[in-house]
Image (tube, rainbow, N blue to C red; front, top):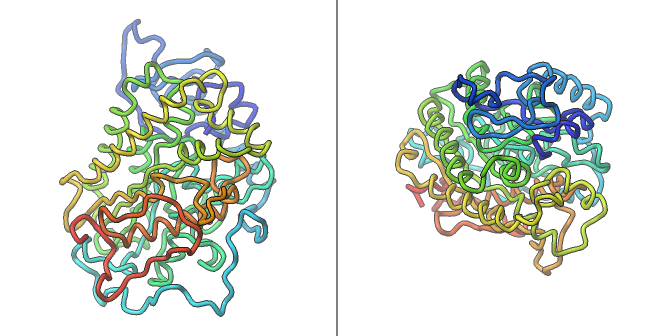
Length: 444
């Protein structure tokens, strides 16, 4: 979540927050486009501290477009992961969920919630009918820094802990959506099971990438499909797939203030890229239910402003979220928040479009993050333990609270879905014989 056009900062931090995978625009020619580049070419020796304009409006450093720099990024990050070790394996600390002892049963009766034969309609799926899980998103989905104790550990992706795609251990230690679904179908696969960079095997079908924005989703969706089709475990036309997409935070945290006239067109482009992604998935990915989730990043940031944030947060947030907290752009933060709120409504409107609903495919807007806040406890007191030490990313406990929220939304009918975070296990929905199906717009 670092600003894209800060070349010096990118080098100091090992280029650890630049986008690796993006869509590329059409080739342009002529002298009037001499300062425009595509995301597949660029000269690292030219304009290192300046900016160039991408053909699809993105303004960035030429470092982003350089294949040598991307390779350097991957190598440095690999070394970094190995030096710091598996931070995701830590099992104590205030930012971890309370461990559930073995004698406490799973909150739901799991018997009878996998269909005897695979359903033919996405609107008749029970929790145990999902065979494959996958995810698209940014660093909140890659669980970046979830188990961090020092700010330099914020560069480690604890993907096994991710709220919607992590599958490390069980729900007793790490409540995640896959760890919940494992109780209904122990053979489910695709979840990340350890700390990993997204090209590592443990990431599996989690292709979320640090600093990803909505404009990256079409490319990342294609990468996910390619990865899944190459996996011999996936029966493309038989297995039911659960794909969670959560995106948008970086658009306003570290992108909107660096793009030319972005406040005039960013919502329009966000809708365009979101539609492109969903149309592609609808065309190529049969037997799929898509959870479409708004990002909690801006809401959580604004709720943290009501308390005295720790020093590490005051130090890191202007770097990771410079559009809101950097001194040069913070005067426009309320405008950026308004644009972010508008995108949340766009996501919901897109999810209702008729072309995204059939027997084979559906999109469901899950709004549990919509009004997210650190003031989610019943006593009204702030709970900073759901945040990582930078107050931007989620802690392991925050991922568990998020998993609880997503699971509840999946069992809640349209127009009755929870829009706020709640304390862990305060409310944990279960399927019933009267309501056994995952809720869609057609069966609510």
